Image 1: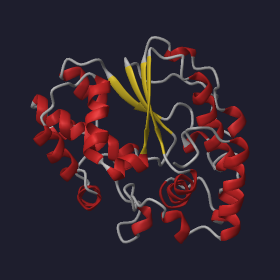
Image 2 (image 1 turned 60 degrees about the vertical axis):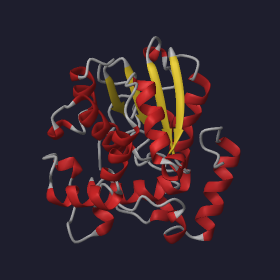
Image 3 (image 1 turned 30 degrees about the horizontal axis):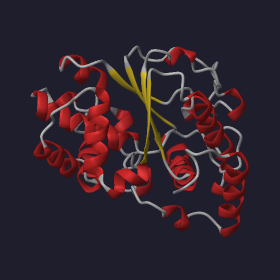
Length: 260
């Protein structure tokens, strides 16, 4: 079991942040943005997932992906999440969100099949103070109250990325200062970041990062890019689990956690 570290630990230095709770589509968005930047600015493909490096090389404001204290390896409970967002004053923040139920299912497989911080059943996981629904809700509730703190703030839903990935990518690039990216470049990036292709490069270890490799190659639930399915939670959660999560969202959620 991971030993909790102090909340509010230093984050990477950047001008813009793409913030996300774990398992809300960060790897997919990183791949989309990275591919577009690599092609538009003619940058090394091997750095595709290093957003801070790519934006610096492109002469853009430096951008970084970050979990803002919510990483599962840290083992923080929902009470430990930092509500003070004053460190983001003067920055640009894009917050990525996803249906809480899909987030929890994906997080469960990350916790059990990839990073080994949890061993219990999924019904207990969604109710756990360190990994469950209350932590997801607290993370977004803090940002709902602090959206005025950054110099610029935007919210992007995972479900919107599925519905129109090209539009979501174009919006993200514009937010990061990468303007005039050709539609053909955006379309190519969307094709590259298809889930079947990302699964292939993950299986091949293309990016050379152990954190981006399957836990067990023969286990499809151990992949970093696992399913990417909207509404897939129904295949894993009981009716009772779904009803419990929905009740918590209704009671303690916010605009960012209530499905459209």
